[in-house]
Length: 240
Image (cartoon, rainbow, N blue to C red; front, side, top):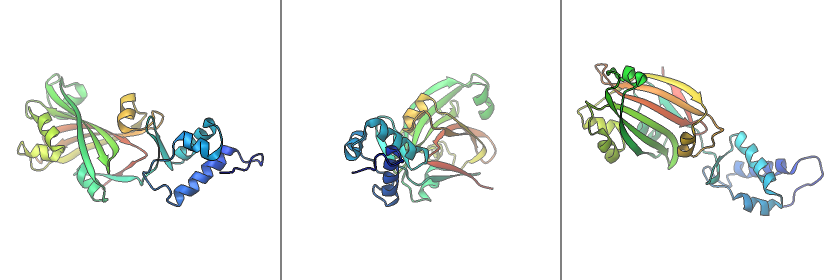
């Protein structure tokens, strides 16, 4: 493709505009991978630095996302994740015609620290089971969650979660047919290296963090959760 050289508009901005117009026209479509840097270098006959500046401009404007080691992708529509008295991952996504999935990363047992012991109303140092999972929408990673459960009440919960992939379904195994959100605290911060790696996002992009407590209808805390959301893929909606 021929660019206008020496006419006052930098080459990277011309490339950025060209790619922006193509994305607006649906070529490539939302979620699709863009050509590689080398393919774009060949197409526009420029150096790699020029291509990277153009892609960075598109990412800064929220049109694409750049995933280290995977490439650049056209940004999908943002998911509205509703927070209210009853929060269910699968229901939130299914209502928006998204295909939800949960996958357990690992589990461990640890003594409850002051934050966890207060949230679950257990003695400090009492064993809790931590289950970490990845949540996806249409195969795209949107959140990373650490679930904390009292080990005395849910001794085999990790095995159930691995098999079922749903907190709601797992709790039914313990006779808990319903539960509600007692509190949700929302913050924003930069991701840790692990957060960025699991969410397939750069370390320079902030994440949204929710700290939550789920309880049985009688008010007994049963789960403390710490969820990290990819902020370019999810926006949090708080129900009145």
